[in-house]
Image (tube, helix red, strand yellow):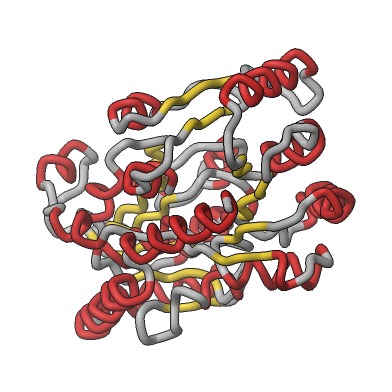
Length: 346
């Protein structure tokens, strides 16, 4: 999302500070004229890393600091408050899972240190109001944006299908998400295994994470295991979407899912969970299908329904692309960014 947005904010100089290490997108940021630095802070209590962060901030003397994701939010609130600079957390997700109880507690404890928040969806804003106790007037929503013209420009690549062992007649079901427990991959695997036939179906899992071993163990005795591909992290997600027939994300909670938005922009019918975060994007049976959380049988039925109904697939994909074009064009989102940044500087 940063890579899409920052190069278009031409009236500002952007510096990205990563906490742990320089990631694979750094060369692309640099080629766009954006400076990227790292503090090599491998844990939250890495004192030397925190000193490096404070030193960089002092040297750069920014007009605004925007923190991005939980660990950055906490470091910004706790260790950069002495700097004479607005510090704005950009809330990217809810933490609606028992695993993230500590995160919710930390958000509640540190909220007095925050003057204003950004959030990427109304659902995230509502979560922080109801569960963290943040005042509504303290949160401004700036949704994620999509360059739909870019996704329209990508064409299906038969060589990519061939390289993955996908035949011309195969139905490709794709899920793009980090392999974390809250993304619900286990329910997708159960649903895929329960489908009546796997001779012409492939399931692509794009992403990596701490649940990979558990998921690989789950399918060890599945009849469908040969047709399930763990692709890991990929740099060609838009191309993978273009060779896919369905997109599925059985997530337990979200913020505003870039993965769903990219699938919708790519013209792929989407099935995802019926949670507030996803209802902002998907209207059931109109521009996608919604299923109950943690319900593999419902998911299997919806997959089967879309595979057997080409007219429904076409209607859903057309409506989905229209939703992205009307509500989340990148140009509109960039304008929101320009306004909030200028107001903050003033």
